[in-house]
Length: 242
Ligand code: URA
Image: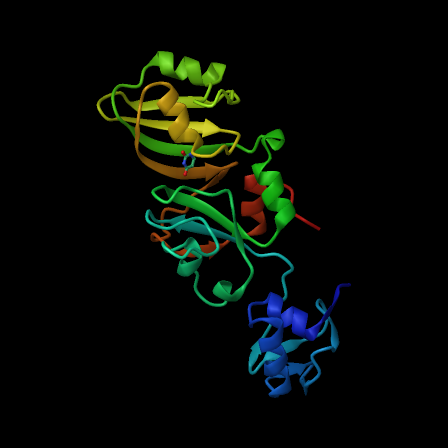
């Protein structure tokens, strides 16, 4: 059984700041088990009490996990003064929740982005020790060869001397540009671009396709989101918070 103050529950569910939801409660918009409740400090049982905002019954979930098909041109940040962020793309009620990006993508990178409020899950997904693979599709200038693939398997040394863990490079087309799939188990800053730079190549286009065994839902239009199911989370393979 999990108990929570009514104002905290509503704020967690995206109905506003603690101050805003207190006002909502005092205005008489909330019922608990069909009885009007005007006391923000009321403690509710999140599994058994029925809390409604107007006619909308709330289904409480401690954590929220979203997949976004990130478009280019958006920062993986919560706010920024100069550029739009992925948070600007979130519809209600997610835009009012305190979500963050688990595993950033560069502004010009597209594809599978996860947003959550589960810090433990994000940590587990990103920790190099947990070896959650991330697969990227990329267009690379020049010809990518079997020698490049062997160098990725051996471990690429980045410009600052950092040695990357072995990565799997699959060459789809070997032309100019070349098309590849790269699977890495870390998330160093600009890692894919810097790995190819270390081999003398520039990444022309980058898209994340997979995290663990979870593949980007290609039916999601760019910038839209969907909630992840328990099965999706199992496919990612990172433990959730309790
Ligand atoms: N590697 C990069 O270089 N950029 C990304 O956005 C993700 C991985």
